[in-house]
Amino acid sequence: MNTALSEPEALASSDTKKSVKPLFQQVSDHIWSDIMAKNSAQHVALPSERDVAEHYGVSRMTARRALEALELKGLVYSEHRKGRFVSPPRFKYDLSRGYHFFQDAQERGADLDISVVSQAATSADEHVARKLGIENGEPIFEYTRLFRSAHHAIFVETEYLVASRFPGFLENDLNQSTTHIFENQYETYAETGDIVISMRSVEQHEARWLGLTESQSAVELQQVISDKNGVPFCYGRLLWRGELTEFTARTVVNQDAS
Image 1 (cartoon, rainbow, N blue to C red):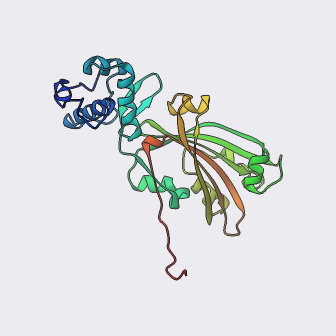
Image 2: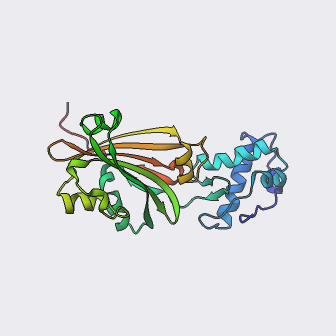
Image 3: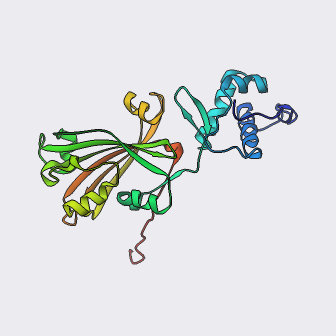
């Protein structure tokens, strides 16, 4: 294992019978103290559930709950069939600047890269048609892209565009900010963005892209981008690894409101 554990006597000497914390939480705290004391680098592997159980003399269930507690705090993340790792600083996503997040990430110096998973000229189903305000079956462009930070998957995005408004769109290099393409080639500028955020279980192909198990949950962000005339031109579905992401927003308060 890459992250070594210190001797468990420190845990045993705390008198677990009198402690107000459950045993799994004590183990969890001790593991994290080790990580902090040794200044473990980002993405360094944590010990396995079996190693934790043997080291502290606890059950596999207690060891699993201890490691899961670190995940719930966002301190570590898991990769399917690879184990758990020390989390990097969370990737910041400003909801009020969501349409321009790629430019913002570049300005922050974030190590962000994009790869196209799929792209197709197809037709809108009822759901997409309703989001874009078009007829069911109308031609659209659909493309899915995977975003990585420091070579680790952060989120996967699928966007839908009205084909008649963006002729030849899929001929562009999509391994870049599509905002630039909208503005520079089609003179289409975003004016508003309606966002809905929810949690859901990932599907098998999404789990494979994000390095999750199919039973895990992720944060889904749906957004409809409209132009200055209030006409929707892009509908996007972004599925985020929540433990690696931090969402922020700025609320404008109307001081004159009664």
